Image: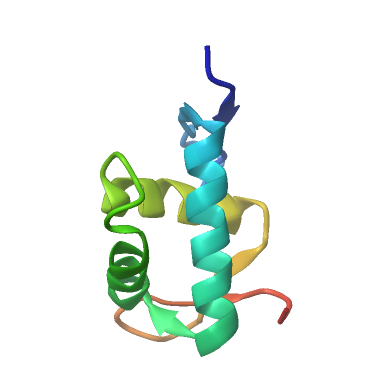
Length: 96
């Protein structure tokens, strides 16, 4: 049986989901890496970057996992939305 992680949600009235720990770790590393390299990017750019980098190595819906892990990282204050930017822009809270 694979290890699971319960993700968090940045809005306190919403609940995270349980996902496979290995998949979480892969997507988390991809998000942190992409934002470290770019400094800031839109959510759709982030998703496309991760899809390009993991397309042949990841089983499951990369956009769904990216959304889920991104929300968890927002709740853990690793990633933040850039205020007053549309569409949604993301950056690391502390540069790596």
